[in-house]
Image (tube, rainbow, N blue to C red):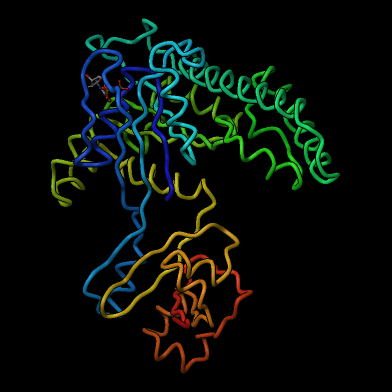
Length: 370
Ligand code: GDP
């Protein structure tokens, strides 16, 4: 499944945010560094209004959204890549994630200790990103040694090793100048060779600016810390999402009507967590297709470019193996027609074969041999 790791310095609000994300999350928020020792994980639904529309049309008994798994990763400190603090554990956990959410403290509160003594988001980010880069440098060095030692085998293997070496050396040169691996351009030949290393700075990052509740309003530019963070993220080509961990942890205690009222009173249109979940999903180049009927309406996650059989395989591997064809209609056409029957009569329901690349929002029905 799809996994996003929540990282950040100790005491920036990771656990509070994580707990709000996964209402039953077990992470414990406490006012001292090294509080979160275990990697905790929780599965969060991806909000999607289209599900309700479809289930209204087909009168489904249940609605099943797609999800993202969030992992609360233990506190990272300076020196983590050298195994200090909980560093090694941190790095192993983050390597397994598809993307990273870096929580950055943008709230002032004298009662909450800051590990570096003051609120300074850019310095905090540098600490984290530096450790990620150091970990990658170590990983690349080990890989280059192995490639150098590698006994020459077939011509193809020697050629592939050369391509990989070239790519890793360029990434390394970038890292030495504080350029994350994701910013080093790689060719189509290089990318699959490098991907196997699961470099930390290759993973997309979203910065979650944790602000005080007064800074949450849509109209507010946040605060000076958020402004600095936005500038930095723009340089890196990353997204910034403004959240208030404290507000989120209060929201989860309220029913949806009360929650909407509370957000409105703060001048905010939606919970920061909703946009965090959506951004994580989009960032990974993921697409959604739907199945809908009386039994259920369900959203399924695929990667951009997946074909109809591959998409069917997300439901069940047997669907992929025995794939015959797919009845497909675009979400908008399905809704405009008011259902499958009418869409068919309008000629908008198509029969697609093995080569069809599934599009965002397709409503699908698979035919397969068992
Ligand atoms: P972590 O170490 O990054 O997981 O941080 P925690 O979530 O455990 O939070 C550390 C402390 O900061 C706790 O006492 C929280 O209640 C407090 N805290 C978290 N978010 C906020 C916030 O948005 N505003 C304020 N004032 N305090 C917060």
